[in-house]
Image (cartoon, rainbow, N blue to C red):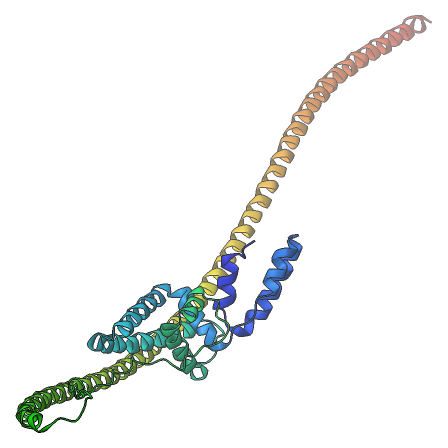
Length: 365
């Protein structure tokens, strides 16, 4: 079962110092999930060196640059096979520029990784050697593309295709006279005539050889001059690359300084904003508390009013009852007075009758 790609990407892009802890956590998680086979596969993964980690960063985060390097390697191998000098020199200059750009990009990617090694301790020379090895060795190139390189690579035999050895073309070998019996006197005269003809032929042949040698020498000088110009152009390109890298570093330093300045300004602004926020929140809390107290006070007043209304109603009822009692008492008093008057009148009548009765008989005696 293939391992999760997101796990592999995380393992081989985070700094090597955290590789073991992340791997062990993934092993434990796989075991908890009931997948011991995946746990064993994860446990077999090994931590890359810092140089290999930098190359893995390139492969996993900038795969298009690594693909360009692969295409350049194929073009270089084709030019080497065909011994095309001008094309080879052009591709060699491209190789140097491409490797320098990839090394600079690896340094930039490492700077963006939290907890990565400091810039001064990055083994950029090993990264450059590995990229050069990938240009020459298809196996190394495949490891680089995989993004799971464990250590830096090198290729001792890498370099431009050696220039072909030039030699002067001087024609074929001298013809060897045929072996035979010694010539007689008649033959010697013919031989002298033949010898003069052969001597003239050899002189013409020597002239032709010399002409070809001069042409070859001039051609060799021209090739050497072209090589010198190519070397000077390559050195100039390397100086331009160094200048460009220096300018890039200066721009990056300026950009970092500007970002740091902006960050400091934003942090000061954030501090002021947080202070204002705390002050506003305190004012809000005070206002909310005052509102709550006012609501409580109003509720208390409303309760008091309700109690007073209730007591007023009770008092009014009691007053009505007492008015009715007073009226009843007044009626009772009136009735009592009337009865009292009646009784008093009756008593007076009885007394009058008794007086009359007493006066009647007694007065006659």
